[in-house]
Image 1 (cartoon, rainbow, N blue to C red):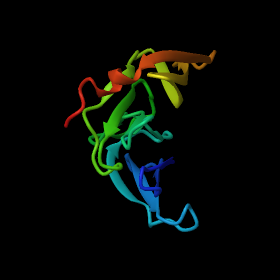
Image 2: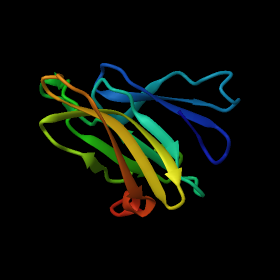
Image 3: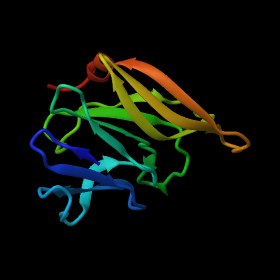
Image 4: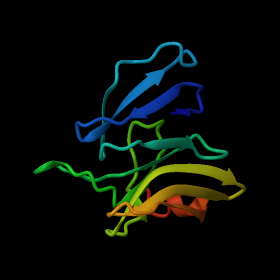
Length: 149
């Protein structure tokens, strides 16, 4: 869930239908719109969303692991990010934060520190015999390198 520049709230909800659903609130979270498909294909995994510092842009980090021919694929091998410049209606081209096919990458979070983002998420091998926490210090400008507009 994130607060937009206009004060409204937006949340992306995971589900088994192959994409996140989105819901909005204009009254500080007292009531919410009926969730609807967001158009962002994703695994059955949480989507992280936050507002970029000193900006109205939104940052989304999620697992885009979906194949419509075979249904949801449980492997969360790709952790992607994208920027929205219109309050979450549309998203720029995604970039991979993590794409090692031997690892599951999931449950991201971000803390901003000046012109950098401290991105953290957990990773573990497919056999799930251990779990590690990864933290990366990423320049905020990196998220914009291939976005549209």
